[in-house]
Image (tube, rainbow, N blue to C red; front, side):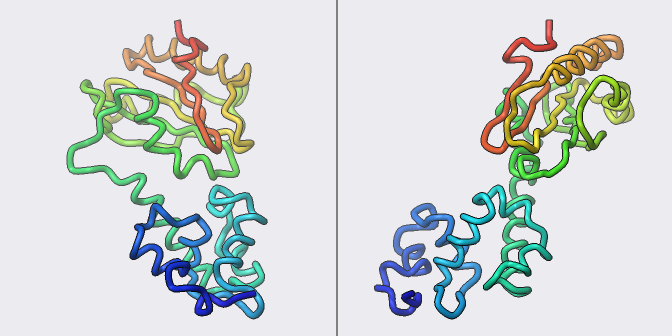
Length: 227
């Protein structure tokens, strides 16, 4: 297996990044820059490719804990720390708000706020996005963990923080750990309940989004639970 140092300079990840920009590199090459060195018989690019292949790509990598990474052959504590630090920086960047609070004008705007993190979660999380009268982000709060169904969830919990902060409206988001964001009958039934509760509380539910591994679904766009 050729070492990175044996590659032509234009094929080495760091040199390619300097010449063509980071967008020109593959996921494995970007990881190779972070990890720096491979192991005996396997250069760092091949090590990164193996890690991605065995664990379901970047989304799978997001799900791995530090301890899980340390157990991967060729990784160890130093590389594991480098990779988890990079993942956390990406999560924080995705969640960071500019000085002007973002305005949510579409389902995609809302999904972009949470998708980086929520698509990698192993458990269902229900998150409420709080909006002011101009649809500007006021904050986000996790209100529920576990499978979303009408027998378990208390719809009033979705509005607790909205009432406390005097939010004008909310968007409810939850993830499907399976990666498939297709709405279930329970998803639609809960949506009907939360929309009706929002009317009674004068805190409209703008949308209910389901986050999958590669895409999201807006129940409002599909006319499910909204009337």
